[in-house]
Length: 315
Image (cartoon, rainbow, N blue to C red):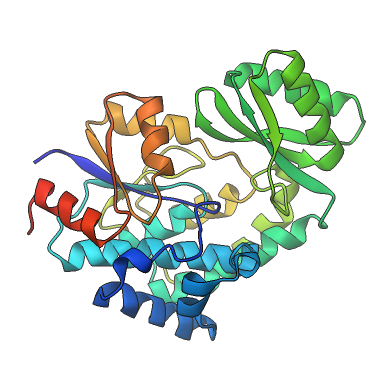
């Protein structure tokens, strides 16, 4: 059988009705109900009906995306799908990967990611921070643009924070510095430099207060050694010690997501196929553009799940 990994998407892949394609799947329904009980919130209605404005609130989006990803993974395993050789998640998606790997109970992960979302939102007042995506410049060029933009205003911060593809990099920091970096990126030849509709400068060093709060919260949670190799965002490394996994999560909130390196490490380690575990195909597309050896499938709905199961065989 082809050596494969599961990928779990993060914030930004949410959409009203995104689990409609799994209507009637008991594993999905049970997972959504479990998450609703953990939060005291009707996630089934929020996912199915929105409104979009509520779904897009960071404190709702993060538990919703975790729930959707874990629900689809459970549907895969419940239908006899084989266990992947490796898992990884993009930013928030790392928490879904941790659940899949048996590191943390789902019932603990749901309130954890809501806490994470609130801590990240609280770290920088709304309007003072932002993010933008830069297309068409490599990592070194984007770093140089950020250094130049920050130098124009003493004390301002703007940094590369998501290395999604070799020439698709997200920056974050103070609002004015992000805007200056976009102008400088365009002048340097970027195909596009566009601000993102987000409420905080996620993964920038400005999020250090969120990391500190996460450290305190995580201290009271029980983590187990992973049953599946999990390649983390912050170090592009596989950790097996529960305390080391917690430390990586703490640092992840205020550190860049090294997704290009993560995909390269998977390919170098013998992963031939990646399966995106949630109704999204963003990560599959990124993987192919990072390394052409990575063939991708996405579990967009029940029909896609059945098709991919037929490809891989059932346990």
